[in-house]
Length: 281
Image (cartoon, rainbow, N blue to C red; front, top):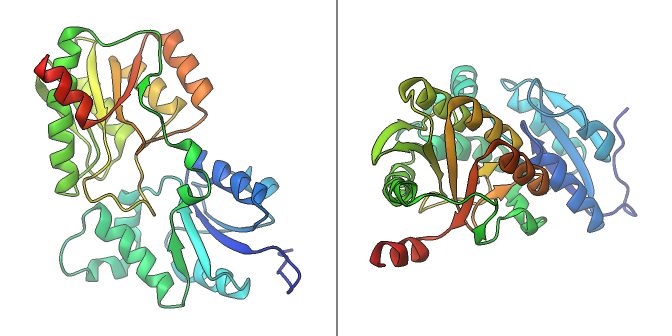
């Protein structure tokens, strides 16, 4: 049975949870800060572990957004966060009202439409990273292995390409080999783009570059990597992962780096300034 707060209860925050471990990390961080977490998990995506962690937990099919809004309102949730991967290809297929978006159905347009539906009922979204900023990766090499000179050229080339794809609100990741674009992430997500690159580039060693969009809204779709990313890269033949420092979430960082070291994959977190210095040297 769901429990609802009284006046003496801790400050309550809503969590709209998708797939992955980010919602779990957020819930734990929010509770450590003395907040009560009411979680509505997307059925078939959100981890069952959230039921053991959050103060209250319910699920809803992705196509029934109204149910999530009603649950939040009944629980007197005024502030909420969105955390975890929402399958945008499924979002596009199932929410009929999204077809009424007039401008386009890019990544941001789809998720902003979700947020606007909640705002109509006075539920405001904020960034989950306000509660757990420590998940943002710091600058530097994360693994023992480092990119080769040729791979650095691919990283520089891929960075500019990924930033342009982000500016166009298409995706955040590109796969590069020998300064050629092998795959660009679109609505299918990073893992599927990496798998596609593996099919197209039979020689192992390509680079994956994942960056924040120039107009990144930190309330949703923040670039995120974890152990699954590394496993997918290894199976597809990718050997370098370049991510943007201070703007990318690394989930279970210790275990993710340990797996990358074991599989011979290099991870580097950097920014545009360092790339400019390397290009000039």
